[in-house]
Amino acid sequence: MNKKVLVIGSANIDYVYNVDKYPVEGETIVATSFSKFLGGKGANQALAVKIMNADVSFVCKIGEDNDGYEIIENLTNNKVNLPFITKSEKYNTGCAGIVIEKNGNNRIIVHPGANDDFDDKDIEKISQLFAEYEYLLIQLEVNLNFIEKIVDLAYRNDIKVILNPAPFKKISKSIIEKCFLIIPNETEFSKLIGKENIKDIKIIEVEAKNFVKNYKTNLLITLGEKGSLYISEEKSLYKKAISVKAIDTTAAGDTFIGGFIRTISKGGTLSEALDFATFASSITVTRRGAQVSIPSEDEVLDKMKEKPIQ
Figure 1 (cartoon, rainbow, N blue to C red):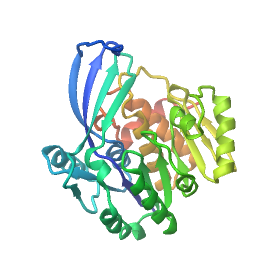
Figure 2: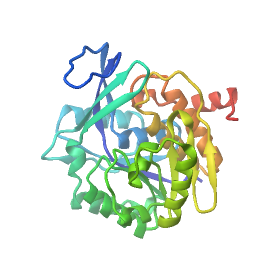
Figure 3: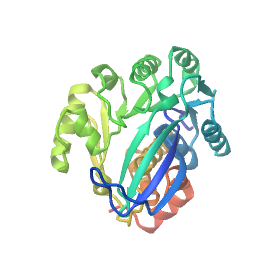
Figure 4: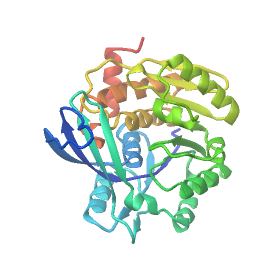
């Protein structure tokens, strides 16, 4: 039996500029191309779970504008369950500016807009949904006061909270200790523990084990082209990445998270979840855009048959 997943988070419009190289300070450059995509970490992750064939519900906050209606239409067309639609009276729908180099690396600037406008009325509505779900997936693209309250409420309702701490903000010990699983990338993990950007996997593993021991939570650290590392008090599991030619890494992390949660919500093992997530993200980075780059379940399973992870 599938375990139901509730995603609460951001929904944005992404404005994407492709460039040969990033501009230096004071430099103006011409983009090689421009595209507009639907995005936001919350919406990306919810869609990833659904596109890869698992049940998911999504709660977001949009503005009273065409961008917001476009987001809702897209979620509805992809059959993501929307328990209710909440709109901000103060802010426009969130947006992001994404600059992508020709090697696929990206830099992202987000304006939260309506995503930052979740309030106590929204919490009251969301609390009425909790009885239906086993997992809550949340990111940091919405306001921290709301996150603090909703994580506490989910924890007290015995829901397993999965936190993707992106974009990084300093979070309280209270939030960390109430999470069943935290999924940062290596940069976010370094910031989470107050260290310089750690790149060495062995050092990351040592620091991760200390973190898990201190906070009594679990960690899944995504390491880009180096793979991923899962750490709990009971076990440590490393998975290599799949070698591909990346053209756009924008939705790699969101697809990985969606693929992982898709698999555990269907009763898959930890190793199976990491394998599926790894293959899913390896497909995503070979395509342009965020949500449009997310592969279907069949695409991932077919790729897994071609080349199992060693």
